[in-house]
Amino acid sequence: VIKCIHCDGDHQSNALKCPIVKSYRATLTKKLLSANRPPPPPSAWSNNNNGNININNNTNYQHNWADYPQLPPPQKQNIPYSTASNEMINKIGELIGSMQKINDVLVRIEKKNQEFE
Image (cartoon, rainbow, N blue to C red):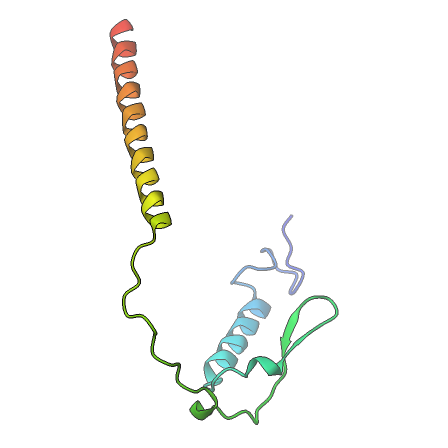
């Protein structure tokens, strides 16, 4: 017999028809949607002893773009392909060719098997 641990109803404990679960989800959704502010900086995050990460409720945080200076422009506009990447592309091409040959052999085997039956 299925019995909810929250309300003793005849449904699973995580079912959406459970009034407790429905109320909890509605409250959580409202809380998440009403939190219309930027996330806290990483310094506001703390690590518990059990390995879980919690966010400290730091409501005094104000995002300031000046704290994040613009990155310098790239030193090289175009980075050429390296020989290693060309070798890798060639190996992938060879593998694709080998797989096509194997596929052709399998098709021939299938035809011969059908003729044999």
